[in-house]
Amino acid sequence: MAEMSARRIFSAEAIGTFVLVSAGPGSAVLATGGFFDEGSIGVLGVSLSFGLALLVMAYAIGNISGCHINPAVTVGLILARKLEARKAGVYVAGQLLGGVLAGLMIWVVASGASGGFTPDATNFAVNGWGALSPGGFGFGAMVVTEVVMTAILVFVVLSTTRRDFSAAAGGLAVGMTLTLIHLVSIPVTNTSVNPARSIAVAVFAGGDALVQLWAFIVFPLVGAAVGAVAWWLVDAPEETTIAPDEPEDLLA
Image 1 (tube, rainbow, N blue to C red):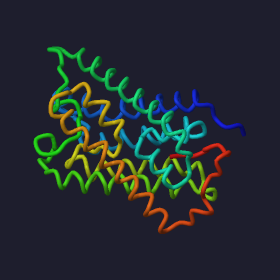
Image 2 (image 1 turned 120 degrees about the vertical axis):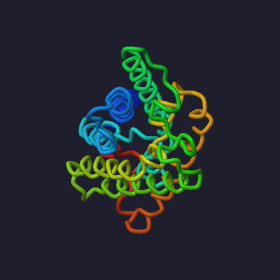
Image 3 (image 1 turned 120 degrees about the horizontal axis):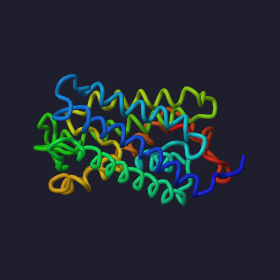
């Protein structure tokens, strides 16, 4: 099997991240709160939206890019030596483009509601602490939550990309993991664990969402490193490392 071109990887990651952000923050903006008070899908519905989006994209683009659709996952795979560092730019560029386009799409759709819509830090599914935390949690709680939850996600991704693990089961495992993570952490930070997801909505909400955005870039990346270390402690890296010239046929 030939190595995937940069164009195909970029396109796959852009499309995958577009779907993830459209489904996750999209459901939070359009199917909860003011737009959908009666019968709001709530935390459970939004959590499932994120998890199902990752699951279906894993099967749609997993054989092309590995379906990272998250810079933290890309960093985790690099640290685990499952992806060459030189390819990081292609992955992250696609993720950021897809996320921002999805954020724009959500804004356009929401603006079509009667009375109009102005995205801000209280109604556009942004990540944050203090006043931007759904439960009013502080900075320390945010740090612990984002680091630990991202570490769990990256640990599961790395553990399910072993050569002896069923690729068909990989998408289900990581999709359900992302659902679980959101069920736990939406009340704390609105759940990032993904810098591309945070950037995608913060650039439109502006204000405090942009002020706090740095934390949802830094701490998910720290969590990725923690997850890679945890994986290294329980697995055998020399048996699972992908050689530089092999394709990254990963379901993550």
